[in-house]
Length: 466
Image 1: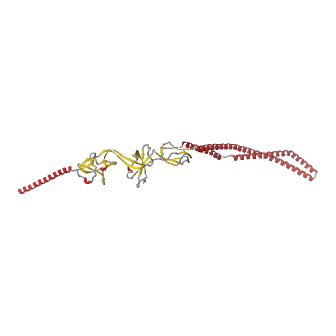
Image 2: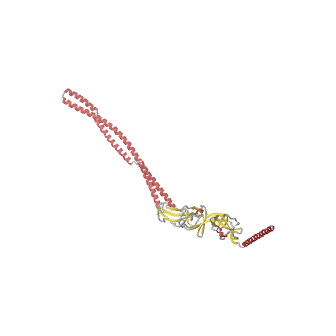
């Protein structure tokens, strides 16, 4: 049994030795392989992330326009003596654009002054005459009343005289009747009585003073007729004065005519002042249209020229829907027209898309020129480069070294001598480099050669780009 055991033990011992030998061979082979692979690692061009200033911008094309366009209208109705600016002219603020011929307005002002004087004289004459007619009316009315009272008194006097004469006539009638009776009766005694009565009545009649009464009646009747005539005369005077009287409304109308003439004259004088001043350019601008010319007759409110403000020029750049969210008011930019460049600033983002230069709608963005511009023409094409962001000391690598797949952004790097995949978070980017927010450090070797995942895990050697 011991031999068996010894044989078994020897067999196990040989197995261990063989295993150890195989392990040793494998280890040595692995070391030799590593040494071989190290000597045959693939070389890749690499860069190391570096801190740089990074400016992200967006380029677009547009046309030069003006934020302010104003049409200049005729300030008065008058002939235009001078309108020499032409379409495309650049004029300075305060330059005279239009002068007028003031001959017609000067004549109209003189005529207006004459109408004022005439209206004033008519009003004053009417008021004065009205005052006279008022006095005549009042005097005639008062005199008419006085004669009316006198006529009434005279009527009473005439009536009283007529009453007395009537009484005398009655007595005469009585006497004649009594005489007739005395003659008819023929009785002496009766005749005596009749005679006594007749004598008494005749004495009474004689005492009535009939001749005096008749003379007085004739005189009073003549006076009555005169008073009637006078009353009629003053009544006619009153009527005539009343007809010539102008009521308050008519006087006010005359006064209004005088005032209206004054207003007309003031308006003409104002127009004459405006015409004398002419029309000056309200701002430094470019003439875009001219509607009249020297020698033409202009009506107040008629358009003469249209100007675009040369100090409010901007480029209307069309931005696609993919980039419009990157644009903000206040962003700065560079405007390029031919070989000339200007500073600009985003001042407005329109809210209506256009399809003028493309089948796809784009949003116009106003990039205004900063400072005075003397050599930019309206309507000319211009390129704009809008600065979206500017990062200082940003950790950057070439944009060409970054890959994208469904899992996000990544780069190929050399880590411990092998190709590895490193997921990264990107920030701002320009045409050449991109900011790395996470995933890389300044000492990492990022491969810039084109690779695929087939290279992952394979030996690699960095050849750092200068």
